[in-house]
Length: 218
Image (cartoon, rainbow, N blue to C red; front, top):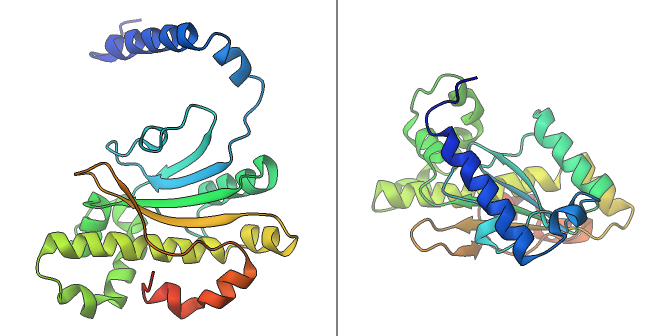
């Protein structure tokens, strides 16, 4: 079978990478194949410029990853819900990180109300966030600043959605140790910026309050 142009390079890269890892860490893949027990679930954007493992310096097997356009968590998304349930109930991760990134194309499209076919339906919740915070966004000096602020507001809303999911509510109710973090990643400097306090249980969520998360007071 004829291979697609450029695919040979990826296969060559894979072989070189596997050989290098095994040379530097003998038995790494044999050990990795036995189980996965990451302590972290990463919910991030599908943007190719945001490689989850690499930007936090973790090896394969250390980070359970779910990515989609504009790092959304929706109560109607069976894919995201399945990942969350598996991570919390089966793997029993200790930390969930919702990480957006500045300059997100999905967020920009929502801000500009760009027509994107099916993707437009997916990012509609970001458009709703934009409308709720229109006054704040309109006060910012440039479109770039508005996009970046909406990226932050979007992360905050996804954290709110996540914390109100039955999976997390049930986990916290039974005393499971689980913390939710809100981060944003800078493409221009490679740095992660925490957006606010960690939500670590029903009590902390109650103390923060729905309005705290909704208004972007992180």
